[in-house]
Amino acid sequence: MKWLRKKRVLLLLFISFVALLYLSSNWMTLLYPIYYKDEIRKHAAHYKVDPFLVASIIRVETNFKPGKESKKGALGIMQLMPDTANWAMDMAKLPSVNLLNVKNEVDANIQLGTWYIQSLHKEMDGNPIAAIAAYNAGPGNVKNWINKGMWDGTYENVKSIPVGETRHYVQRVIYYYNQYTDVYKDGF
Image (tube, rainbow, N blue to C red; front, side, top):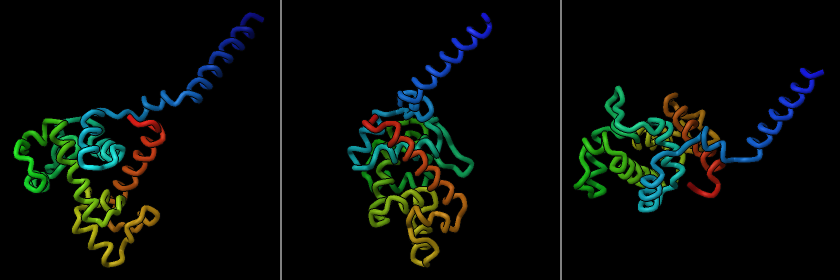
C-alpha cells in the first residue's frame, strides 16, 4: 500500500507541475529566448522596424551568437554580406561603423541589419514577407520572381519561391516571429 500511496503523490506532483507550466507562459521564454533586447529595441524604434522581426531574423541567422562569419562570408549576428554592409553603411551614413564592427560588435551589427531591413521593406513596397525573402536572396532576385509571376510575395504562396533556401528561410523567420509575438505578448 505504501508504494501505491507514493505513486499517487508523485502523480499528483507531476500533474501539478505540468499544470503550472501550462498556465504560466513565462516558461516559454526559456524555449524562445531573446538576447540583446536593449540593442534590438533601440534600433528597431529608431528605424521603425518591428523588434520581433529583428529578433526572428537574428534567431534564424545565428541563434544570437555574435562574431559569426558564414562560409559565404556573411558577418556578425545578423549575417550581413560585406558588400551589402559597406553599401548600407554608406547609405545609412554610419561613418563610425566598419566591417570589423559589423562582424564583432552586436550593437553595430544590429544597427546596420535593422537599417537594412527597413530599406528592404521600402524597396519591396511595404511587403514584409518579400522583405524577409530579400534579406536572404537579395532584393533583385525577389523583384525578379515577383515580376515574372514565379511568386506573388505572400506568405500563403511561400512554397512558390523558386529557391529552397529562401523558401525555408522565410518559413523559419515567420515561425519564430509568431512564437515571439505569442510568448512576449506584452513586449520584451
